[in-house]
Length: 89
Image (cartoon, rainbow, N blue to C red; front, side, top):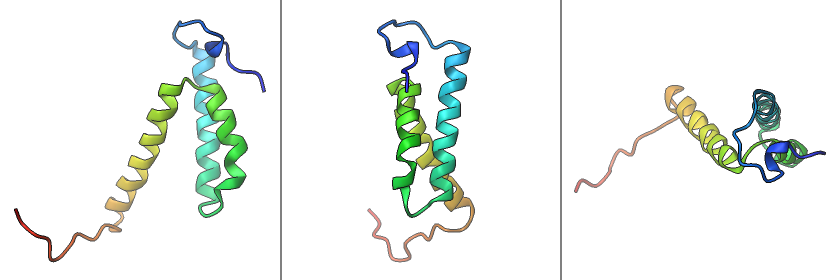
């Protein structure tokens, strides 16, 4: 695997091609996670490609974004059950 030129020390913004590569790697990784909900070890190769294709800040953002989207889907799907006996301050 060759790292993107973005990671060779230059501080310019990623090119359109680099962004496309990053987003494609992210999408393949997320798809693997969705398809193998329980055993994510088989997705490690996609995670490595994702990390090698995207700036670190983007990886953190995308990880948080995925967690949020999963949480949002659970909320909208009725999977959230509020506590019945919560304490009030």
